[in-house]
Length: 400
Image 1 (cartoon, rainbow, N blue to C red):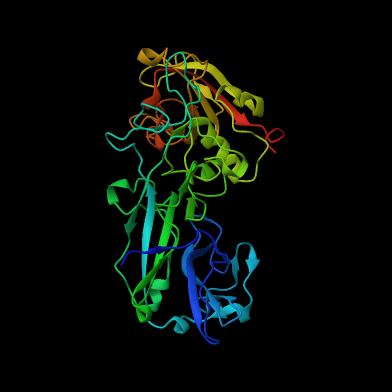
Image 2 (cartoon, helix red, strand yellow):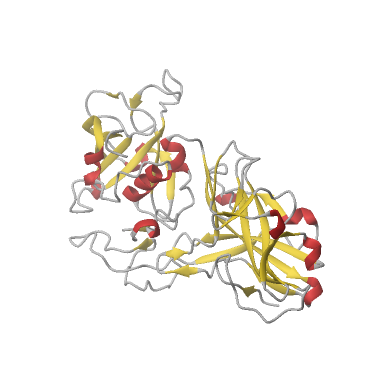
C-alpha cells in the first residue's frame, strides 16, 4: 500500500465523526532533541558532534466525538513541544491506543547534481543548481528558481519493535562513499507508521515530495550536526547542502536559511546567522569587506599554493579568504572577486620542518571549507590556485 501523505505540519485535519472512545490518527511527525535531557521538539534538530542527538516518532490523533487533539508518543519522550507549544500530560496517549504498528525510517536527500538530461525550469545550463547566469558577461543575472530534486532511502526494514520508534539523529549519508565529513552536516528524515490493526494503512511524515519553489519544505525534519560552537563549526553544519548559485529567498525562506542550498558567499553568511549573528545580509563576495577587517593581502599564490612574496601570517581558522582566480580562469567572471572560502585548519608541508602541523602561515597546504560543485568542500587551498587573495575577519561590531 502506498503511504498516505498527510498535511506537512502538526495541525487540524478534517476527519469523519468518531465513536465516543475512538482514537483516530491523522498525521505522523518527527521530533528530536539535543543534547540528552533536552526538550523534544518538531523544530530542526541542531547539535554539536559531541551531543547525543536523537529522533522519535509522534502521531497526532483526534479522540472521541469532540475530536480532541492528542498525541501518541512514548512516555520517555518528554518534555515535548509541538509547533512551539508544550504538550500537556493529559494530551498524551500510549502506543497501545493504536494497536499493532510498524515503523520505518528513511533518509531524505537532495540530488547533488542535476539529473543527466534533465532540463532546468529556468533555462540554466549548469550541471549544478543555479538561479542565475553562471559565467560570461551576464554572470549573476537572475534566471528564476531552479528546481532541486530529492529522494528517500529507507534506513531499515519495517519493525514492530518499540525501539524502532526512536533513533539516533545523525548526518551520515546512507552510502559509505558519500560519508566524507565524519558525521558533520545536514540530513533530513521521514518516518512512516503502518497501522497493522487498521488494514495496514500507512501514514508518512513529509518527505522527498514535500517541496516548494525554494526547495524542500521546512516540514521535512532537518538534522544539522556541527563540529562545535565556533564559526567554522557552524559552517560545518552546511556540509552535504547542495550548491545553488545565486541562492535567494525572502527572510526565513532564503534557501540558505532553510539549508536548501547556497552559493559561496551565502553559505558564509548563513553560518553567521545560524550562530546568532544576523547583522550581515546575504550579499556578494565583493561586499563582504563591509562587515570585516582585513587581516592580510592582497597577495598572490602560484599554482602550487606558494606565496609570491613574503609569507602570509596572522591568519586564524574561521578567517575569510576571498579569491580572484588566475591562470586559465583569470577571466571567468567580470567581478573583482570570483570566490570565497574559510580557513578551516592550519596545515603545513608534510615533508617540511613542521611535518604537516600548524605553522601560522597561509599557503596551499591549509585546509579550507567552501561551496564548490556540487556542495560544500573541505580541501587544501592549493586546489583553487593560482589566485590573488585577501584575508578578512568578521568584525564583531558589524555582524550583529
